Image (cartoon, rainbow, N blue to C red):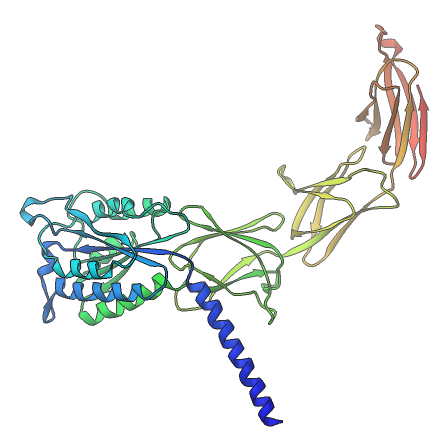
Length: 458
């Protein structure tokens, strides 16, 4: 008995681990990824650092970076180098070249090219970033990443920050990684607006940074979206969430919010290199913009969406073919929803104005929707008006409200007309169409009662 239990337990644990591994592996392999390494081979890279030079350390770490990236499936790598073709005295601000383009199985060529680089010229970072737009092949559904290894500030015209932000908005690449060798505080201030910046002032620093960059570049980050009620409890669910790239505004995912088997919001895996705009499709929708994820931790994204219900019903049979109600936020004109009668729909807690499309219209102002409560709107059963005309008339139906005449409906040119109407007292006002004298205007009062037909001959 004990052995059978232990065997069952082992099978359960193994199944759980396999499912977990499969979900993580799926989340961390989102499709093809292209990584462009922009390598600084300007003259300043000959500067000594510890017992070596910056260029020697940068070469060693670039090769380690290439090896680490190539261990992931569906990854292509390319190499752009600047400052390596012209000497510094020429001040060439276009000394930047794609040395190894994107292609599968190009690792040997990449490493050979890195090892052959000799530092010479200037530091045209902005120009290199601008040129890398042409380096990425046009292909949908690919993550494009940029990793810059540099030891100097921009020496030419152009602003790396502005160019980086513009290309991110165009969707050319995600937020770049910038590894600065032997850098200062000013160096960091100049580059953190262009991407995620890391200091590497020693060889050990560089090695650690490469590990962090690879992890952030290639692994998805877990998160959950907590839809909060009034008491800040994450219990709201069963609503669509649309997730957009905050830079490009491109729609990335549609997820129906779900509670997992433990009764908590289900886990999502998202690319930590993006910022996100999230739309929760409540009535009305709720927006949370510029959401950033912290790598290496499970992120909680909290959004306030307390909700209640509005339910519409009619006493008895409606007789309306498709009765609806228009819902707007109190004091506003934009329609939030048009809800069909005899249904219940969830809305954000708040105050709403309603217009029920009966004949005549029924209005409810300042309806309060409270959390987890249902505001029930019930209207009387309508009656039926049968109009029989024996002559050609121009006329309409009105009612007196607060001492004033209000239009209700037009009488058609047909000789027989049926109108479904709410109970109440009304009057038909009109005249014989060929008549040219106003004094021959007629009025005929009538009453509509629920579930009954009122017949008028005019």
